[in-house]
Structures are given as structure tokens and as C-alpha cells.
Length: 126
Image (cartoon, rainbow, N blue to C red; front, side):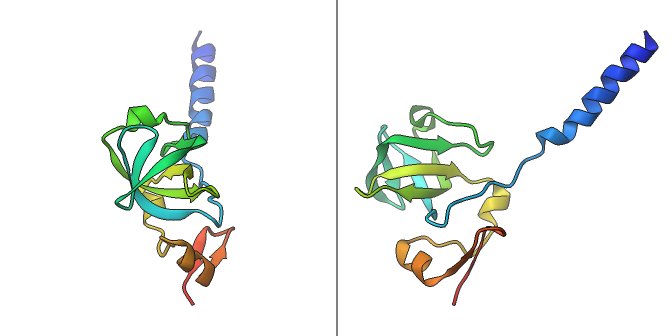
């Protein structure tokens, strides 16, 4: 019985590192902004009214899919992409460690002028 208990505890302790947060990889096209979830599919992105694109994906801090309706009334810092129509396509709600990575472009002009290192997930201003 004691051996069985030790085996269970050992297995449980070895699986703990699997729950550590994994660094997320954001695409070079991802911009940083503040999003307020109003009335889905309507959102306010950096104070401007826009809509979520059909098929948009919102990923929470744990990288799990979130429903826009469940986020109504919240204002969050995110990385996001837009589609060709200007609708918000992909949204990643930022964790404190991701938000601390600066600089990160807030608009397309900055993203075109700055250099991106995808491996380090870091931007460099010219």
C-alpha cells in the first residue's frame, strides 16, 4: 500500500512542470492594443468601434478559446490581427509577462518600420 502511494505521489510531482505556462508565439502581423468587449460582435479597439470578423478567435491568458459574450464589459490588453476588411480576426489576451515585453507595435506603420525577431518574440525600433 505504501509503495502504491509513493508511486502515485511521484507521478503527480513529475507532472507538475507540464502545467507551467508556455511562451506563446505571436505572428509578426500582431499589433498591441486595448480592447473593450461591448456587445458581440462589436468591440472597441483603442477607443474605436470595430467588429470581430466571422470566425475570429479569442485566446485567453491560458491560450484557451474564450467566447466574446463571456468577456462583455471587460477592457483588456491584447495582441490582435485584422483581416482585409479591417475586422478583428485573432485576439490573444496578454499575460503580465507578455505585456511587459516592450516595445510592441500598436499600428501597421510601426510594424513596417521596426524589426521583428520571431524566435525571441521581440521588436526593435530603428
